[in-house]
Image 1 (tube, rainbow, N blue to C red):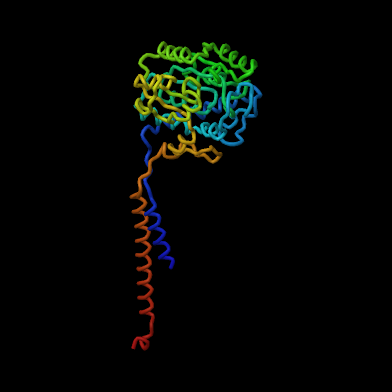
Image 2 (image 1 turned 135 degrees about the vertical axis):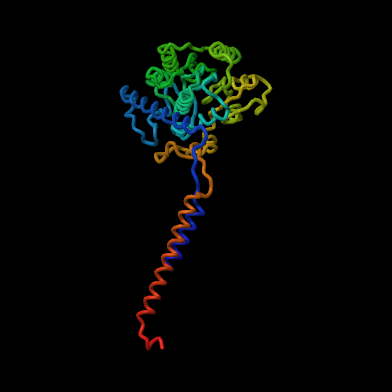
Length: 359
């Protein structure tokens, strides 16, 4: 009975075995993850020193960065689960994977637009760029949707500047707006607008204060072209009104990598559309629940998340030859041992039997 159970166990082990191999770009993805961990922990110390909160992760790693649902710089509704999921350090590996797929390297020049809505995704992007040594021309917005960078004492502009001043990142915004309605924070009170304007001016960033859609978009494109020649990629994080369009257009814009020709548009009404029309691909970090499903990341993020693990880092091939050989040797060896022992026992009993019993 025991032999049968052992043999079945070895067969099960062999049949369910697999080989695990590091995926392409493994070292870069690991570096991006480590960069993001370092960035979040540095911000943790800054939050504590400023007395914003105690820096504890009550929900998952980095959850101290989840801002209040309502604040004077909160612009619109948002998903807490999505904000939390972007704080996963493996999110930086996901963005690195996209950059690798697009065959970018340290010689590539990119343009970036992000808001205060997804501080985790912003940090993930900056961490991926550091890992790959890519320079970026960045335009940011201060305002944030619910649960984003909504602490007035520590806006996204402040977070970015802290990481830059600490030497953790080498890319930072050269132009910034208040964000929100018409990119002017029309839904904010005067106090909230003042917080954003002060953060922008204090960190010596040029203020973009244009409400007209065409003029705003032209100013953004001019900034990118002046700062970076031969742009090979545009990356958007969040839902800047003139970057992605209104809520309906934002909903219809695909997540992840968008190649020229993937979407059709009758007008160049957004920054994304402008770049696509110039045959420049786009990475759209939105629809977080979709991205996490595609790249095998948890949604929402929990405390049991395993960093540097998963399909972004390892591929699996069914059947591990070493396991199969080991299982065979164990099973065969056990059967052989039982056979030898049984043979000796039978022989021993035959020799010890009385002659009369044989007759």
